Image (cartoon, rainbow, N blue to C red):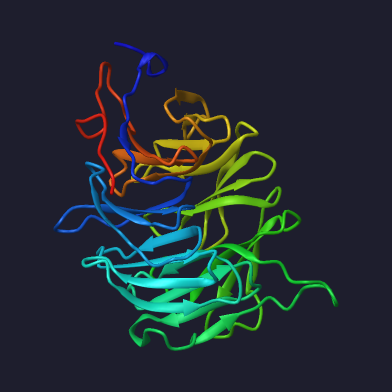
Amino acid sequence: MASPAAIQQLPLVCPGHNRGVVELNYSATTPDGVFFISACLDGKPMLRDGVSGDWIGTFDGHKGAVWSAAITPDATLAATGAADFTARLWDALTGDALAVLPQNHICKSVAFSSTADRLLTAGAMAAISVYDVALGEAPPLSTLVDGGAAEGAKPPGVKFVRYVGDSPHQVVSASNSPRDAFLCTWDVRSGEAPTGRIELTAGVRSAELCVDGTTLVVVTDDAKVHVLDASSGKVLREPLQVAEATESASLQLPGRGRLVTGGRDLEVHAYDYETGAELESLRGHHGPVWVVRHAPDGETFASGSDDATVRIWRSNPQPNCGAAAGGATNGGA
């Protein structure tokens, strides 16, 4: 039997964008299948079938690069955040815009609650905004602001924000300042200040909240991957030292079999979660890999790159395996 290192994967290639893909997020498995949404610097977020990679639709309306995209577990609503100082709420079934939510600066992160009735937005502005999805374009219900910045100092922006688990109140966020070697936890009912900090080894480069809603995978600026329980702050494994070029990491669930990473070296790397041993080095992208995300069943994962493509890979490849979903290329719009 061939060793993992000897297996050459042929990923399923999903073209359609014309600039870098910077975020990917999957729905849960629904009666109609599983889906993912891609955020792209071309300003055209796209919805695709999570298994075949087939293009389903493009959400048209933003007038700037789209930095963040989220989809509800049932794949009926989507949200995007962009450089045009807006976040937008979409009907994921029709592609219609449901609300345009003005922001005070570039919106870098959007996230739904597990029940899809609340939406978080954050970015170059210092505050995290909490919206009631049912109220459309109404002002935010509340804002979360860290008042701990030194007097006269400009508070840093927020690059990552998520609800934790099924809680409608618990939120975790990461600053965009390289000096902030921690995550903040919040209770949206107060919003006066973070309720706690989760200490890290360096500033946050990127983060993923896994499909279970509590496992957090964080890449820090010292090229380490941290795996934490977002609800308690507990460290789930020792930080894994990875290549300095690493930009994103994703954990295979269920089972915690593999960690995959992508980065500026144009490669996707797969590691054994328990031992940290590298299992695969996957080549195919022609630009830096900005984001990697596992499908909810853990059987495949997707990578988004500066080469304007998304590629779907098998999590547990077998010798002589073909493309992840049975074909080499699926077109876009």
